[in-house]
Image 1 (cartoon, rainbow, N blue to C red):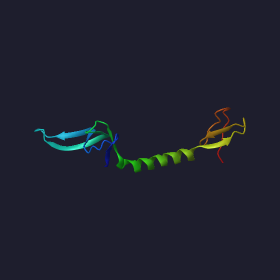
Image 2 (cartoon, rainbow, N blue to C red):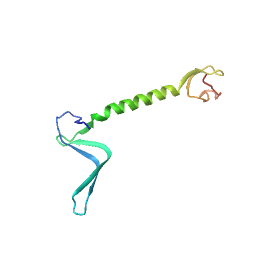
Image 3 (spheres, helix red, strand yellow):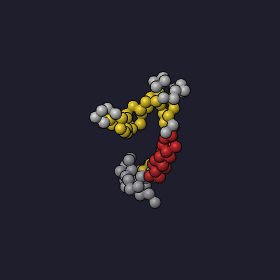
Image 4 (cartoon, helix red, strand yellow):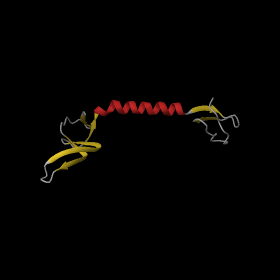
Length: 102
């Protein structure tokens, strides 16, 4: 985890917004769990960002973009001769003719 203030104020203390804290019957801290990532800078109050998550998020976005690109293809409809972007085994959005990707 590498937290930084989004307004670049230089603050070094942050608060987890969605943390679940477990206490014993005397109110003594036992454990915690981050339910949802979300942090705030205690110096200026701006949202904080976890830069440690950036590489994994960029990789996930690249995989999603690649899957989306591979799933669709531009083809010419043999019935209405319109260039359409379709996935596998779809119909032409203009005339409804069944399309096959070779």
